[in-house]
Amino acid sequence: MDVRLENHLDYFIHDNTAAAGLSPEMLAVAREAFRAGDFNLLAEIYGSQLADLRQPDRSLCLLNADALSRAGRTAEALDSYCTAANLDRLRPNELGSLVDCIAHTLRVKECLKECADSDGVSEDEHSLDLFSCRLCKLFYEPVTTPCGHTFCMKCLERCLDHNPNCPLCKENITEYLATRGYHKTLLMEEVLQRYLSEELAERSKVYQEEMAELSNLAQEVPIFICTMAFPTIPCPLQVFEPCYRLMIRRSMETGTKQFGMCIADDIKGFADYGCMLEVKDVKFQADGRSVVDTVGVSRFRVLSHGHRDGYNTAKIEHLEDQKVEGEELAELQKLHDCVYEQASTWFTSLKDNMKNQIVSHFGQLPDKDPDIQGGASGPAWCWWLLAVLPLEKRAQLSILAMTTLRERLSTTRRVLSLKSRLSKVTYRL
Ligand SMILES: [Zn+2]
Ligand SMILES: [Zn+2]
Image (cartoon, rainbow, N blue to C red; front, side, top):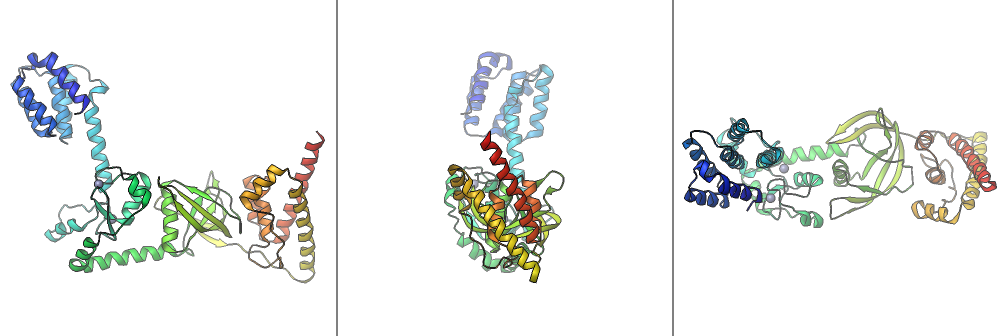
């Protein structure tokens, strides 16, 4: 039994029975009604008792108000709280039941907010209710939770991104979430196929259209705002925010397995340049988080910003290095070889623990590429170096945005010279 109401009842017995005139028999019925969860009956008992009194009794008003709020009759409950408040100021601890009741109502409303408004719908539409997900419309790929409630799998997954409770009864379904043992509710699917095939076909069409839209990265790329990423360089991620859980799931479902990575920007939300990441592996954890192994694919410039279901999106243009020929290429090759030597020397000069840390995160310094203009992003070692050099994110970003290898190498050379001069100074000190 609820401790608060139990105490409330005891308090009531000791101090107010006489004043309120509640007979022991009525009190017994009230206790029984409370135990049975029949708050309407409880409210009726208190209400009739109050009606018999010449002066309203504050404690009885509160008991009545609590019973009414538990019965979900909030407006009447408020009237009764007001009557009690007029007799003596209300204390916060006297409003527990009201707060619980309002919180519960709000939660249920949130869950059902997308449920079709049943006002003015026809009989047929009412019968459709039976086959409706409480989170959207007609069931699509329905699954049933251990507590027996059925939702579309995607609707349920999105709710579970926020908390591990059944969206309807609030039962904790952490274990279900941990195993992700979603099994389709086949009976429901068969019933839908047989009796509502047209509606189901329409629902399926909407789903396919959404998938096609989500797969079209030429139109819109989901943007993960977190860290600097570079072509060819691994970028492991811990994903726990609901919006990013959805983003990762979608990238797997659509099969694109890609999204853009940008660093945050105070004014624009995210930086103008970023790197596409490809998902290599996702491990979903019991608590709903996921560990995502990704690797950088290509660089991009942001053309416009957008939003989708809580995460950022962008229309982008891919960046490619400008190619050079003849004399210019020969010079570029010379610069390239020279900076590679410099990079190698810098890396060798690092202390062992630093070196080990870098190797465990990013691997060894990659070998020189046979063709320095081979890919759209130039030699991999350049990106490896940029990822491991202790540089400000903004400096890394400006190098990421460069579209000539010559410019990138020259800047890298300056950074390396500066770093080795600094380390010499530190050494002498
Ligand atoms: Zn649904
Ligand atoms: Zn449930």
